Image (cartoon, rainbow, N blue to C red; front, top):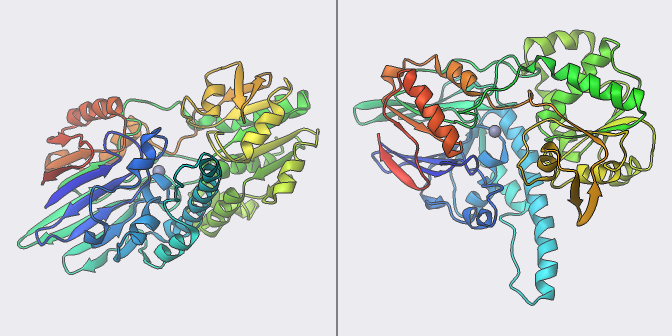
Length: 466
Ligand SMILES: [Zn+2]
């Protein structure tokens, strides 16, 4: 059996790994989009490193775009097999991929307007809404913990890894002539004791392990204070200074975590009487999917539901989809909390909210997750006092606060805890993917200390025989 790596190889996006069997049958693990790689991004997303028509099966670990975002293009380019994932991943892909197509089509329209003026060649989106719909027909959902026979020599098992709703470790039992190999691909590893999701669960003993390493060199601060920090920001800003709290947040995951935290604070009578708005159409759709799968969230959510049936709704909270309603929030000068996408504040409605509120010292911009250093959220996070938004300069007078404990990726201790279900001596090949080189080297060292041998950090488009 051979394994080749075509993305998330010494980087954190573009996840794509191909297993080639003795009969030349090919299994693709994830088909993610490259993101934030500067000028190279465009070219990286136009070639795969393999022929789409040559792939027989596609198995998807979770719905994040860096793992799923090129599926519509793969199908458009000739892939005609099935796409296996969990039911929640399928529901999330429907909205995430449609949103990705929408963003690309809008970007291309904008870029082409300028290109046309300059007489330059026009560009095309990677795929359109129609391509998304076509690829969705190929999805087959497989429940967690239920072995599924893809054919008489490939068996699939999804086990929960606590990263996002529906996310799984992909476990494959592959029979080749007279040899059976157990392959495990961790996807992205989540965390233990989070607000909403169940803890990662042990997975079957692997012979070949493909493991992520995003935080291979880092430890998170304790997650216990996040609710308190959010509460402090709301009290100090809205109650004491009569200002607004603006929270840039990813539509899937982080937004629901914040809403649930505010809901808990409200239930316990701690939250001041201020209006809370979730202003993002994608977040509204993602929240509805979280509601649909509320039964699969952790036991703390289950007991919360006994007192309040909707973990993502309470009296003070309004979901905004309409663009005009979103713009009207900037005219209102009453204290309020606005949670809006995108998480790095580089695009989306939150950029407008920040622009309208950044010059008032009574307001707070609350950064709740990782942000690329060059993004608007990244610049605010690092304490810059003057930023450019839509080409205009603004002095940063609003307070900027950072909560670091909310992350969907486990740190190295949590990843090692997750891997502790494995007898490291029995794993004959380990591949470390999905990490920056420093994080990968650090994690390789830690895995070695735990007894894992034969560890490789593949570079893009390299192939190994295992
Ligand atoms: Zn992910």
